[in-house]
Image (tube, rainbow, N blue to C red; front, side, top):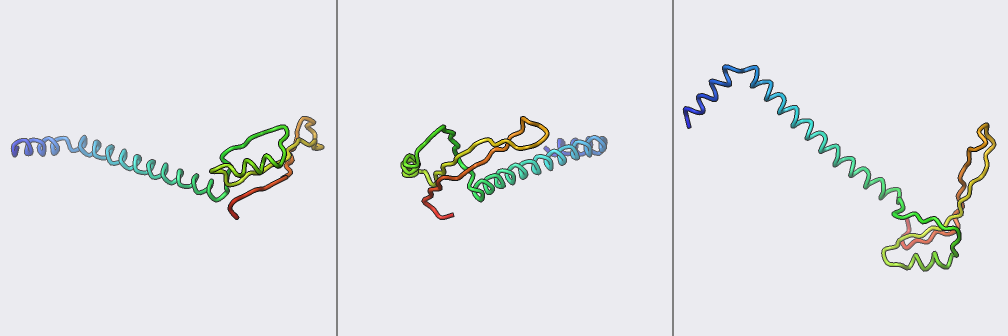
Length: 116
């Protein structure tokens, strides 16, 4: 084993440039891997925090007509924290482009088990 170690040291001394280049490539690769893995964790944590702080809806359902009594029933389902009914319609806007539209939203009911 000692002779093998001496041979490796002699080869490394004889080929210093290759040894330094390979070591540098390995170090740079590890640095890039570490930086990207940390970035992925930070981005995932940021997305989770944003969704929690802004209370982004898990499900959006678009219906033509639904009575408010049905909203009350949906709110009583297990795992439902908040139900919101809206009236949404397109309104014309006077601009140069006649096809451009603005979407208007009217809240008709906000039901929640928790106070936000």
